[in-house]
Image 1 (tube, rainbow, N blue to C red):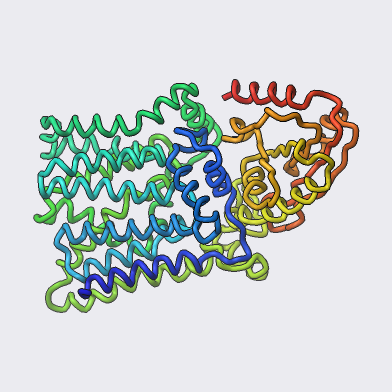
Image 2 (image 1 turned 30 degrees about the vertical axis):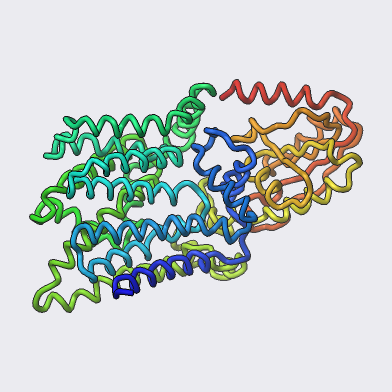
Length: 507
């Protein structure tokens, strides 16, 4: 093996190792992960929550045994592939070994470590952005139209993973128009590549059409309930935090795109950076939507700094540039990752509070950071539902109805019985099995709405009782109650059909 191959292998192995040790075994999966995993049991060309590609990966995970190892493997893999792509982009830009090490260090010790701990579409989204930018660089350098078709396939996969990649296209098009690369629009093969991309995403577009474009409703709800509260200055400040230790490399890359002669043909990347950020800001997008924008600029910056620090006394600054990302990672390691037990965090609350990590979206301080609290209580809930389900006569005629997708997904993931919990929330509204008659109901109700459940649901059954609740005080679902209703007095299936129809019409 060459020296470069050894170094690259070391970075990739370290990446995988870190992804597995940065989560304490005290935590369960995160609520979104349960929904994505459950999609493997309901394969389709689209979902209310995400495009279909995540479900295909979930199906692979299911075939591999559905263990936590494989659930965490795929986001780690996508993160490692992002690092590999940045390495290849640096090589394409004729960077030396120092540039490769600097770029890889910046990618490794960044927000991507946090992003790649969770099984969500975000890790693959960042990989898709980086790959598409890489294809553009290869096309600019070689002029080979094959890279246009490769880019079309990558765009389609990115689109089928997360619609967020449309922001990349929206920011890239005006940058191409104002640059010397606009001659691409005169090439027939460019439009053939566009056609290929459209054909690949057509099944999902047809699914959206046949289901009355739920993505539009989802975006509207998102805009009305979450994005309207996004602070544009807060968005920009978050961008500085994502790659704090690598910020000087990103700035160097942007500067080089304007002034470094060997990068003159890539100047459109400077403009696409500005256009894309402006679009994100205009739409009040969530801050992490823009993470995929940065890896390619780390590549540009690493090559430029390698050249800049390659003569005289400047060479002595080279080790410092590699150490800086590592130094910034140390406080991240201590506080940002769920690698400390809840008890440890409780004993060191002052430090977490000073950093603002205990502040939830309700504006109040809690015992744990919100993301960590979202990874607790799920096994407890599933075990208790499983126990109550088994104790009922005719358990196969029992409907398990939850308040949210996290509850339903966790029960379906952990339970050993043939329970298929559902909810009127997210994709579960499409997954009700009403082909068999239900005579019992297990109702999982969040703490903020449990007081009325006995009064509103109890009269429709012969017996009603509170079976159990989540007792882990650190869990975000703390207090969630499990109600058990047996011996239906009404046609449960008919009532559920009406509520499902009403929920779908509401969408």
